Image (cartoon, rainbow, N blue to C red; front, side, top):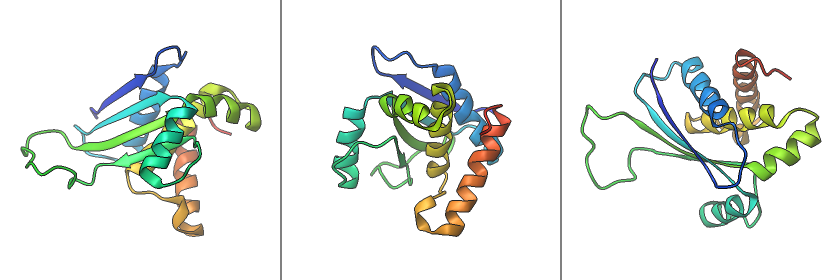
Length: 153
């Protein structure tokens, strides 16, 4: 299937944007999302994730990944029926990628892919914070996609 994944990387960050795109595409394919959907993923810093977390979630602390799903009601304008469905935006802290990769004992590439998968699943409605059953379901989907990417635990 064909999806549009735009990956924006802040200056001075040595990020494998192709891996981010591949991870996002893998989620969309695994979840059988209809072709033509679009998503934007920004790889940035702890400082920017801290600002976004504070401004949008009221949490005054940095975090590793934030997802901003487009519920279709964010615009006062009507979207033409033939336009692609915009799923939303994801922001990932590359600073957190490096720290967490070291903490968990795996490569930064695996951590970057994992956070991309995690954020994509949030855009699709998965939420590990709703309770143990939802957390188990989301973790299972994450592991399935990571395995398909060749990056299992």
